[in-house]
Image (cartoon, rainbow, N blue to C red; front, side, top):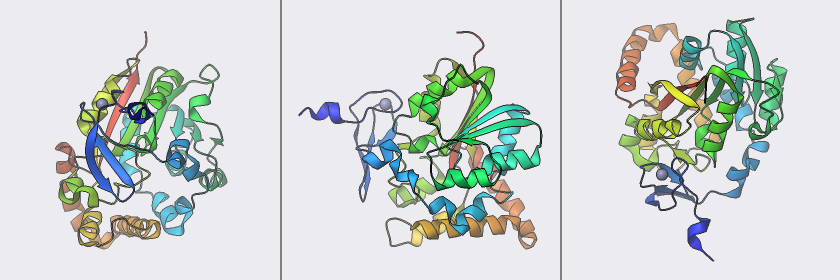
Length: 305
Ligand SMILES: [Zn+2]
């Protein structure tokens, strides 16, 4: 058997000659000549999305409480509103619908929205919150039937075996001048620099590990889209602290959700207001240096081909 053909092509440049990078339990990461780091091989349950069908993690009380807290999508909303003040929005990988729910409750009437995800309990939950969803694969939706002013991928690209096909599809379903938002963990964040593979978000369901440079490279290859904004946001020092002292290689779901819940509670506590100003300053500084936990790009659909 030809080993070469079995290898996963680089999700950015499609080459198949990546070198070993990091290993963490069952996860093997490789680094392409173009600098992209990705998982190879990819277990079937992640490639097919079957892993997410019955996943209860997104429905645990602490995960829901943190996702549905008003502060959870604060930064994403600010970015989103700056580029898309109204219109038709498609949230790909909407999970329990928290982002669209925020959009709906804070800006009632401004948006016509739709969420897509792997069918399962998370999507059912989104529906109970009044978020319109469809149980349809994004790659299979009919782009002639409906066009959008915005397509969002909040923490989605890292989960996809073929992210390039999703970005291409986004370009097809966007109206000319419409915007695509991608946010994904930053492989060059302060947290990864300090912790290396011990960082909790280096995990089996994350298949792609972008940096600011490789995310831009990835975006530029989609010629129907032009980049209009990029940057780095979010900083969770508690995660660094916990992972630094942790003796276990991976963090159980429930523990991860509980920490997010605690962080969210602190962000909302009036007692911590003075600390918050300092924290925001640190986050802004890390963001400006591309050292924050996540990186993002905003792309605009070109008006002519
Ligand atoms: Zn590559």
